[in-house]
Length: 165
Image 1 (cartoon, rainbow, N blue to C red):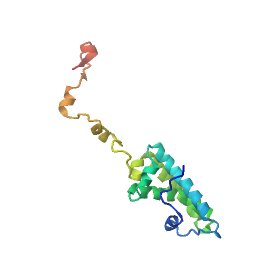
Image 2: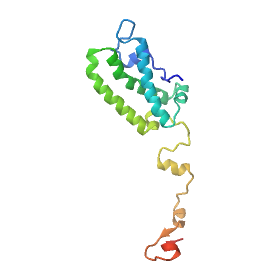
Image 3: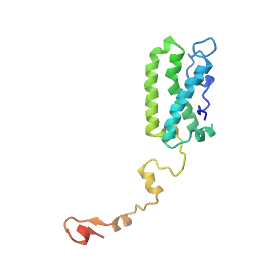
Image 4: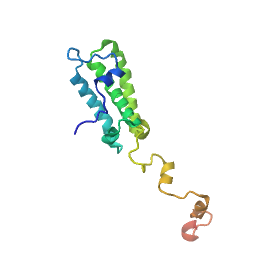
């Protein structure tokens, strides 16, 4: 199975990192760039897969925010390795900062993939308790709350140890 790279190629990477020199005579070849981008995309796709999302579903529509956000994540994750592979000495100081940025973005993706990518695989997904209450069709009206059983510790023994209807 091929790794979904969300259209990230040499041209796309160079639009984000114009200092990169990619070519057959430079230290960073097109083949090496492709390898690094696929590795970065595999990390992003692995996190998305663990969250229950399909990278092929996201990649199916190239006009969505989720697709663009995944492109951005792939470039961010690949950037430190690309700069290192290009032997770009002026950018070596940036590599540590870019590693921190990549790790921060991957942590954010792990914590909340919906907010990070803007993609919801299924309208029935419930990212928080507020929507899960309405999603499950639970009645939260005052009348319903008043009809629930309550516990009165002042009257033990009455109706199974103090529970009243």
